[in-house]
Image (cartoon, rainbow, N blue to C red):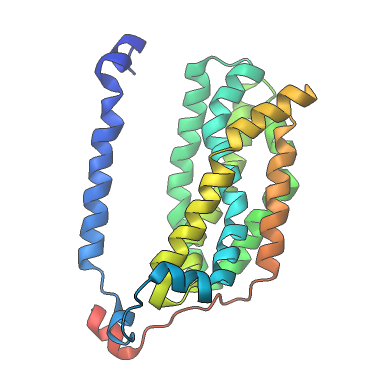
Length: 256
């Protein structure tokens, strides 16, 4: 809604100020959520990170494998897509950002719905559906986005919003359940952030390289499909339930 001059002068600060609210929300949750397992845990490890690499490296690899499609998919469809639509589907920057913003809003609505559903039917069925969907539908959905028709582009990205929301709604709980409580934070944060940094952060660069070298605007589809294959194999090798942590009756009462 701001002019380029307003954004440059002061508007760029607004997202950072709003981000402070996220920090306070996280602090509130952390202070009010009971961690029942802490009362039954043995002495804390002297070096959680070393113990995580020593004892939970398989879980960390599973976390990386499952998140490859999430990292590549989100950065490609909701970060790089605005530039891609402008450069290769001939939308204005404003039109591309409008389409992107509407679909991100839709995704935010869908995430808690899939989270609730995963509590009822399990994490793995939803994750498998999302990953297989991305493997099968990435090319046709990107083709819709590339059509130059605003409605088709909106619907194509909405298809991705549904599939990515399925992953976003499930993978946080799935990752927590895959790691032993004793070193959960260390193992999960290293595995997750390594994956996001290596595969997610480099996705726009790789997409640009693939399009430039192949002279095919749709070349980026094959990168997301390859990521889906990696995550699909990881999921097929991961048992359900994923080491699900079940609090004791005592712990549940404590939490109440």
